[in-house]
Image (tube, rainbow, N blue to C red; front, side, top):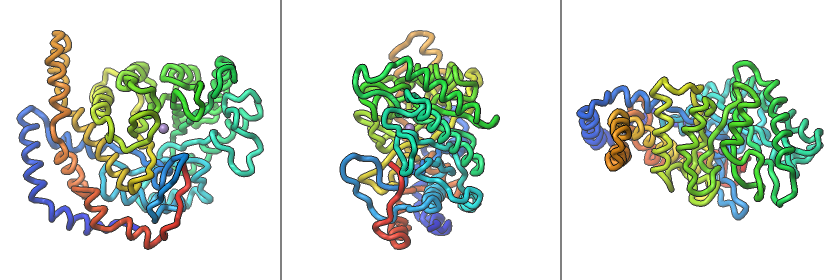
Length: 427
Ligand SMILES: [Mn+2]
């Protein structure tokens, strides 16, 4: 299934009048405030977010799954689904693979297939939180932190295997998600677990090619309920700094305790030059993996203010950031959900770009608290949807991605090709 670009162009033409009015209105307002609209459009268009291979089917739940049909059953089909997203939205052009859910039998052939779909390979994700069939060691009591050196080596070897596969695919990042920890007080020794994890990460790092980076994610709880080895950004930063220069911290929006000031976490890790990137999702309670921006769009905008501070200036020394969605879907069509997430990210980015930084700095320095709020919220409350839509239109993508998706009847076509019962591997 590939999108016919003519169909997208026809749909855009139908909506052109209304869109042009909306776009001109906001473009005039932005120009009057001193913004270069063409430059804004270019920046929005160049923000690319990787799509995870596990987010294309029905997602994680301990309860019932309710698949909607036409799920991608192979890696090739997953890449085709991402090319559908890339044809409608302007914000994604890569896949982040999860090993072993998506082990390619012929990496060179897969790379060529993806290339023909216009999709490249982003970070490789290792999995040391599940025992696979035929496994000779068990991760039941941990992986990189395990008390048994044989299990640690087994987990290290798996990560090195991910690097090897990634090299053939053209990836240059390994993301290590550490689910290790303990569920009961006294079950494990905090210090020993941390030291073992550091040693294991160093062993993986030693196998990392020169031009690769390694990311680690923190999470306060789940799957373990008493402690996680990498429970917060401080632990994550400590591990990164001790492991090596190219070991960076990944921030996942869902991996924080309620009310954590995530934008401040971003600022702190950026200040240390160790922010690798972001896993976007949203949540009400914990790691809910909901559609980006569905619960806390203001928080997302505040996070983007910090990211844009780095992206627009040269006063923060940090490598370029890698962005990925990390979500799962049980009630929405996964592709519609991902289109909504991509839109929410682009909108927040646009809002952060137009926030008046100079005025905010002056108000902050003058301790004019009321004015700082006026300035920050002014950009958040600007309706920039037409600006984001215009950046898509100029790239030949859909003015209204979800509407186009429905009018082109993508899901119906996928069900026709793959059937109702095809199942995607992943969470
Ligand atoms: Mn994540």
